[in-house]
Length: 97
Image (cartoon, rainbow, N blue to C red; front, side, top):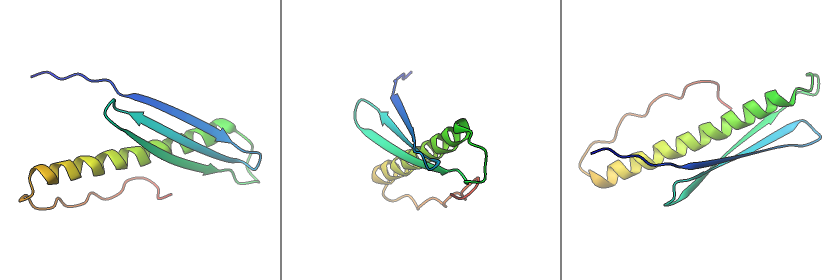
């Protein structure tokens, strides 16, 4: 059986005068919502390029949202198959923030 659904994603970026960019990404599935958060801090010695802070903060917020989705899916799987063994955790990829 084929299945198609559409989820709405809203991303807000806010940069303050001190070089901190905050991102908030809201996922609305129509049945619930999740919010991811990310922050990027510009080194005062670096050139002021707002797009870089936006990219970093947004990417971190999307990573946060992705982790939440995977955690929720794993929980749903466990609830459906309580006798199944716990899956091995996957190592984190990329830079630790």
